[in-house]
Image (spheres, rainbow, N blue to C red):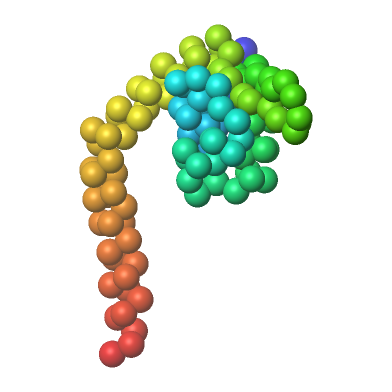
Length: 127
C-alpha cells in the first residue's frame, strides 16, 4: 500500500491543523511567560474578539496545550496556562516565527508580483 494513501491521517497533520489557525499560535505565545486571565490575554494580543479568544482557548484545552484554572474568591475568575505539551509546541511556533522574520519580505514581494499582473489586466480594458 503506498504511504501517500495515509497522508490525510498522519500525525503530522495534527500539528499542521494546530498551526493553520492563526490564533492558536498567537495565544500560545501570549501564554509563554505565565498564566493569564482572558482579559489580560485580550489586552496583550490586541485585535482578537472575546468570542474568538474563548473559542481558541477551548480548542487549546481540547488539544491538551493549555489548562483552565479557576481563581479563588468572588467574583468568579479563571486563568489559562500552558501545559507541558503546549510549552513543547512553542518550539516549532518559534521556528516558524523566525522563518517568517527572515523571509517575510520575500513572501510579500512574491505576493506583490503575483497581484501586479491582475491589477494591470484590470486596467487594460478601461482605455
